[in-house]
Length: 244
Image (cartoon, rainbow, N blue to C red; front, top):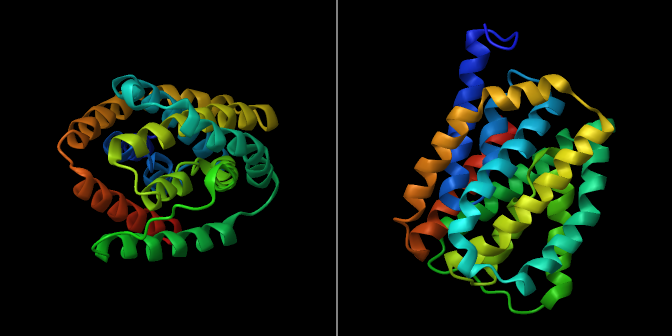
């Protein structure tokens, strides 16, 4: 027993942290989708939300330094501004409503788009919309982040549709995710403080950092095409886990 948990529960919490760390370390997103698909079978949604936001914040902070030369504030701020307005709405839904229907819609979207991105020889490039479009995507990502740590999903897809190379894309959506996870964690703790969730965060740190290290090593071996394919596979898998 550890922190009042059975060994079985701890094992699956560690597995979620490891799998999520590998996913996010390798692509810069999908930690929440990968980890919560395992965690939600063993802990309640509020605690899962705390773990997703806290772990996501920690693991992204460990890898963003290596990408600092690619970070361009002018690209990032529209997403962040939109996201800051979206997070409180998502946190409200998390605390007071049943988000099951929204998760199904998100799952179908991820599966359809992921399949398209995986099979299409080349993605359609979106050049219009400018910063207002980026703000809108950031806002929707913030709502999804408040709902359960899914803030990186839509900005990640959007950067692919913009046609940005992997370094540029990751240097946009990963800093965005860092800000959204920090705000989401603060919002969840403000609305419904849960000490048990914070204790769980400490318990799963070892597999989290191990998974992040493995994922980062894999990222270095991916060219733009393989990176896009890896993202597509993660999107499909994420959609499936939201339904199961």
